[in-house]
Length: 278
Image 1 (tube, one colour):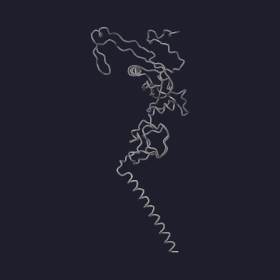
Image 2: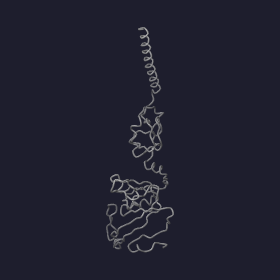
Image 3: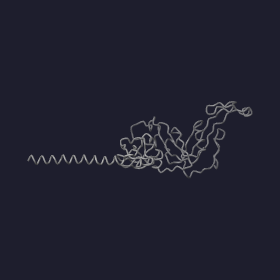
Image 4: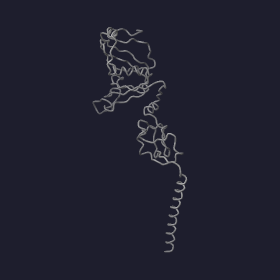
């Protein structure tokens, strides 16, 4: 009985020694294979990552591995913080390296999910508007809107004007003819403008409501300002930003069948005149 037990113990010990020797052999073989090769750190997906997951929140879903340079993927991610503001464009599976080409801007992902295609010749500009100036807060990405510009009077009688914080002296001939004030004015600035994103100011409650019932967006409005991104031509971006800085911007819901007939800028003198074609 003792001999049999001794035999079993010896067999176990020999098996353990054999396993250790095999592991050591494999490790030595890997080290020999990597001898003289430069190793780099790469991020490898450790748990499934769903499309839309923020890139800078992947710390618990990835691991760092040392691999030879020759197997490092093109565009491999070297810092999760470098993915801030970007999200996974597709589902990521365990075992694959993180590469920058699989991440896109957060707004681009939202646009893609909403089926919004931004023309290549447009630039995107974000403006901040109170709900009453943005169709009661009901404006949505993918819709088209008309942009209206409204200006209060400003004094024209001056020999020195301020532009972007700098005081500029007018030539005498120009200053002599400058007098009075501009009228109040409102007019359509842009037509058929694509809305690409709408964000609620995080400092405000999402909706103003007086009770604990489920909020219905059809009869309640956001309590704070909205950040609305529009796709416009570069020249129209200048006009839009100027109006946002020095006047007031209003949005009007605009559908495809709305006629694009020209209309004059409205002032106090003609605000009660009939619209063209009426």
